[in-house]
Length: 376
Ligand code: ADP
Image (cartoon, rainbow, N blue to C red):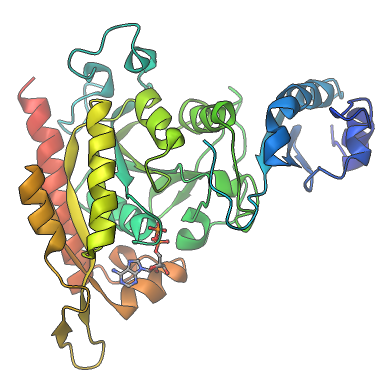
């Protein structure tokens, strides 16, 4: 039975905002998507009022579910970030990769935050790609690394958990909204032979979002557990940048095998990277290694290399911190143009020098995952 937006609006009219006006008059509703019995939309509110709105969100979802023919209603609570404002706070046939379920951080008591972790059926390993600060090329690296692991024969999925600024829609050119299957799980969008999920598929990418702690967890949990990922050897998670509460909570709740830190060679970025490693260490997530992105400049015309950012800083930092150094990725026009065009370089130029660099980093990560499995 077809559902139209008027029916959805009629149902939402019965829900009252914290200020006592009807939801439809509160000027908070995003565009409503209603198709095949599935209804998606978001409620955009002031970040300071987000907590009061959580109940309204739940009521809105319940009201939409009462419409005959609606099988699923998904309502997200989002808040626009004011400029300058800080973000608030096992399958046995896998390719030798250790199942997440076996990875309980050493010594984590059952009542510790790590005790809340649960494995995701079908996913053997989850690795995070993180950075101490934004703009260092974390998302570009996460996507190309996922593609490199795919090329190395692993079944890979990519989750864009950068809920403050999801970039996977732009980097992959995917603009579709995920459908829901009979089990009411979101069906990830398959691109480049990999299942992808991003909060950007559900809300507009341009909308910078502020999420309150409980909202962060519910969004991330939905994208992990309410998605039909299928059988994966590795799920690569593109984490939000920084080392705030959100990242910490995420690292505590998501069963991570390890984290890959992306940094540029500059001192400031490295200080942030160090903080990132310390944070993951605190929650017993091992660092799989550091990648130096924009390591050196390679002239697209003549191929000449110049170390404009003082290349090598991340390697020294890795040595100092006694974590593996995974490799250097040059600052190169083709990496930028290909990722910004939705055609990541590992896929668009698989025989090129950059794809080879990502693959060699991927090979080291695969070695660590498989090596750990072999040792069990
Ligand atoms: P982050 O996730 O850290 O915010 P992005 O992956 O979105 O960063 O990258 C920021 C910008 O830098 C994008 O325009 C991207 O294309 C570009 N970029 C990332 N890595 C490289 C690289 N190695 N060479 C050239 N441009 C890069």
